[in-house]
Amino acid sequence: MRRFAYCKVVLATSLVWVMLDMFILLYFSECNKCDDKKERGLPGRNDALVKPRDGPGEGGKPVVIPKESQEKMKEMFKINQFNLMASEMIALNRSLPDVRLEGCKNKLYPDNLPRTSVVIVFHNEAWSTLLRTVHSVIDRSPQTLLEEIVLVDDASERDFLKRPLEQYVRKLEVPVRVVRMEQRSGLIRARLKGASISKGQVITFLDAHCECTTGWLEPLLARIKQDKTVVCPIIDVISDDTFEYMAGSDMTYGGFNWKLNFRWYPVPQREMDRRKGDRTLPVRTPTMAGGLFSIDRDYFQEIGTYDAGMDIWGGENLEISFRIWQCGGTLEIVTCSHVGHVFRKATPYTFPGGTGQIINKNNRRLAEVWMDEFKNFFYIISPGVTKVDYGDITSRSSLRQKLQCKPFSWYLENVYPDSQIPRHYYSLGEVFSYTANKEIRTDDLCLDVSKLNGPVMMLKCHHLKGNQLWEYDPVKLTLVHVNSNQCLDKASEEDSQVPSVRDCTHSRSQQWLLRNVTLPEVF
Ligand code: UDP
Ligand code: MN
Image: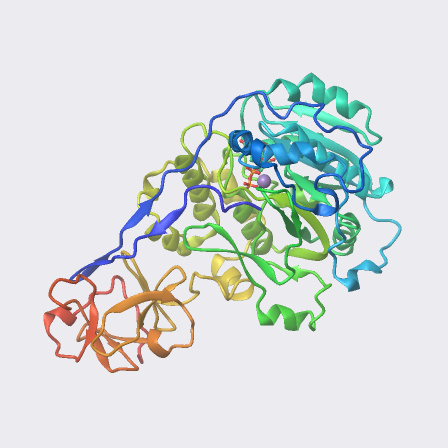
């Protein structure tokens, strides 16, 4: 899911260029934290399970808040960083559209599918979203396939999540257990706790603000039974503003950028070809969003569950993705399974110790254990991250050894060739890499020329060479823009600090030193 949330890194548009070196300015906007402990979202709002067909939010429709309530709505929004007022108006068992591809609707699945426990961890979640998640699981899963629901309370500070929650779930027709973390631990260790006390052959993790749709479970379990892959549903979007239910696309899959932010990218042609164009077949995905997936219990054990040294939130989704692929597993998005999730723009809860610190620590742990020399792409674009203490990783490194996992270069080459991290590169300097495709590149941006004698710009890499093709001469130290046959020049118009391309004069303003450059012999 996620991961529009936390600190947004904004790449400054102005580049300050210094001869023989390059710097880029990164501005970090402050994380938007909201430490709100008000008692809201109490049980009893719209707990009635008998509802009018045209009630608020029915059929996944957006909820409209009347003008006179909008001030209050804005206040309530801050509590969970979604429209709590709208959520409370919607029935806990609202109806949803069937958003599946036609080809998914009549698929048949074996009778003897494994049973699943559904593990939902939460910290200060709203009553309405948590219980709507629970009801949607119960209402839309065949009872024979649902072992139990395990709710793990990660030290919430809201009274309604204590006894009232236990009393409420007791009367549900499926066993629902509530367990509590003794102290705030974060979603990783909370999920580990839930997994350890659960009983089903399969463990399905969900966030506490999801809604499962018709037929979501069978295709996930069928895939796991067939071969032990780790599977994710398509994650549909429940609007944080209106709680409208919007179908997610089967044409996007999970990736990540240099900052190790999870991102959705278009499913590449090679993956469409492998499935012979059948969009109802599962998509192999390089990474998972994190919050929603199913895994066989024994396989979860075998590949080393989660890294319990990770705190609160972040990094664990890439860590388990890399681990699955590098250690011989498969990670897929099952396109016939749809589950909705409320995507938030900001995080409502605190990160004890600081958001940046914690996320950087988690990311360092995964980079150090799984990414080999490619961790440097992350370190280069995240100033200061190498100073963050990441604790002891010996047990995770020995896990990698024990399972004889493949190198990260194998993953880039075979699983994620369209990655923003180039599999081959000649130089990785302070700011940019000089890739084997002869791009000067940082993350998904490439140095681009659109005008003779004009300034250069960082534009989205198109990988078509063209105006983004640069030839480095390690003797003359020039970077020649092949199309124009002009040289990258530090000097430009008097008062501008943006470098440009100029006719090659071999003056000092056209000499560039690439760090640790290893060029092939014939270059
Ligand atoms: N969570 C938790 N403890 C924490 C942080 C998060 O139990 O310290 C839960 C949270 O309530 C949610 C799940 O972990 O059910 C994922 O967190 P969140 O939804 O904030 O992540 P996002 O979907 O924004 O990535
Ligand atoms: Mn979430």
